Image: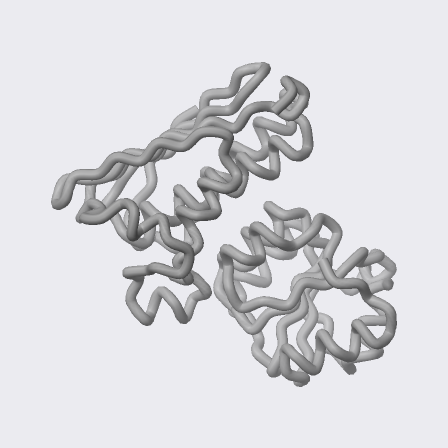
Length: 139
Length: 113
């Protein structure tokens, strides 16, 4: 399943992650797998909304795992290791006032995913892929 | 703890979900950060927050919180209330501060998420 995500569209932000959650519950994924996939999907979706012009959020559901892919067109991340640090954020004040921009999005994704890969090109965009192994598969 | 007890302890106003005040909240999570609410709260919790944007309802829905309590007398907009009604998520408001609200509920036996 795939969704397009618009930058700065806070009214619809989170709808794609909610749809992914519903689908995972419908196919009977383990409750912990659903929780971890929802964290990854929501944080990835909100990263596109907050930082990018537009992007795409996709979820590929397999019996043993969920793959989440977030690809955006935007400013990119100049220093990925810095962006992965807990508490590091480039979000402006008006975004922080909404409760975002605490610098926990990417670290939370990393903690929730079994595997995560992040690549980025400045002034082009960012690609995030995360795999969440289903609990029943022994993860 | 049931929501009607939360209402009584904090002298709270119910904005929507009046018919759901018999719902039990298993724990409380007080926070003004979306990411922390998403990652660290438990299902069936009472989400206690000063954030009144629509994302707090979306997050509450995703983490399967049983209700949201807004502190400092902050009232959310109609779009937020409507989304909460659609999701059958009770919303309450108290004039108490976040720390005070959490403290009073904890004192009365509501566990931390």
